Length: 211
Image 1 (cartoon, one colour):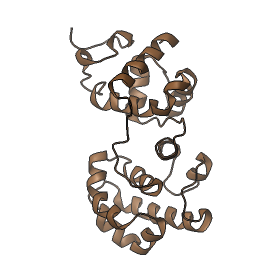
Image 2: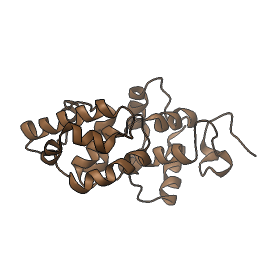
Image 3: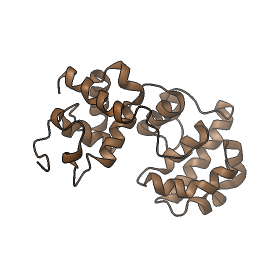
């Protein structure tokens, strides 16, 4: 996709949703970090259901450590891989207290030093909590980038690198959310809703559905 088309792509998505937000519920950077860790291989809706009561009582790493691993498991047992996730969340909470004074760090390297936090999770936290122009390439972003022709790549890292190069700076603060939401609700994996796609004419997908 050419630069002018990429600009128009995001202009249209911005016109429809000027201030997109994460669909994960959170109250501060720490609870966002916990929610994103929990969201791996789980739906945002499922995570929100599990964290509703948890975040009413736990808003800091210190409070999470007081709750303990067993108490955390009781809250998140409906989420896939909850045992491993609970272990990681307790471990990262301890490191936040010991190394960072209980605060969530604002650099990717520091975030990725925490248990259970990979590049994608770090990018989400940097973008959503701190407004950094980062892109977390999940399955939705990966699919939309490749399918539309905005940024083709065989790995999430390759797609991320290309997206950072081709997306105009003006759209970067919210590009992550626009791509995710477009992939989640319009450019779906099995049944893309091409007839109702606002960027259909810009998209390079050869197998568009509908008229």
